[in-house]
Length: 92
Image (cartoon, rainbow, N blue to C red):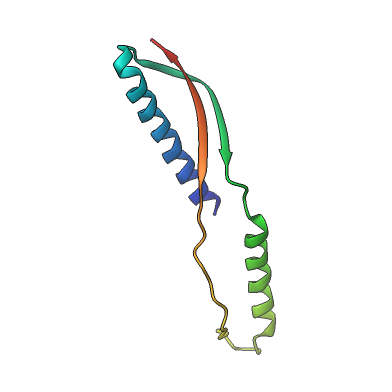
């Protein structure tokens, strides 16, 4: 999960750089190095991840010895991963 979050963070940083270029181009300025980066995101639902882990442990516990699968009628849904950044650049 953290690997996915890092990929999303990288994309957010990339997008911030592109926006900074778009904002400064009409001013005939260029962006320089980033001088301040803040990572913010929607509140993480770590409880959801913890519950999924506990569910997996419980399903394994209920399996009969030698059984390698467990059928369940649980409905799994997609989760949204969202990350945001605030980056300040030196303008040239």
